Amino acid sequence: MDSSRGSGKLFLAVWCLVLLTLGLVFTLFAQLVDVYFTLDVDPLEATGSDGVRWVWTASACVTVAVSAVALAIASGSTGMRWMTAITLVIAVVASAAFVVPRDRFTPPPKPNVLPSGYTPCYSGSNTCN
Image (cartoon, rainbow, N blue to C red; front, top):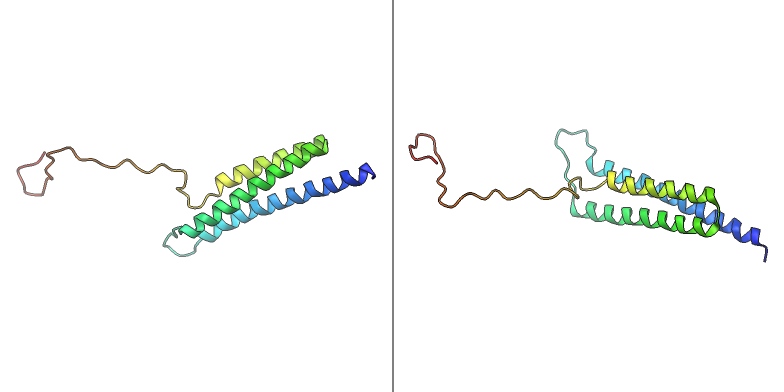
């Protein structure tokens, strides 16, 4: 079997994975625009299904990019390694930047615990804490 034919198929496979990764990056951006872009005054809120859709797309994006890096390493081409490494960085950054819902990685606020024996102060009351 001719080795150039096998490396050509590997080269094509890496390019397909890189293009698929970039397509998924665009899809992540399109999902963000789909959820949050509005011309109305009222802001939109992401639903649970929007969050699940983001998880699947971001996971696929990073997984395909890692697969491209693995194939590039197997190909032995330094240029392919660099190209797929840059694509992997783009996939990870896009997955973190185009997050749905926006507050996915924000910790919840600490609950406001009132001290024991707290008495609220009402207007006109002389018994305020």
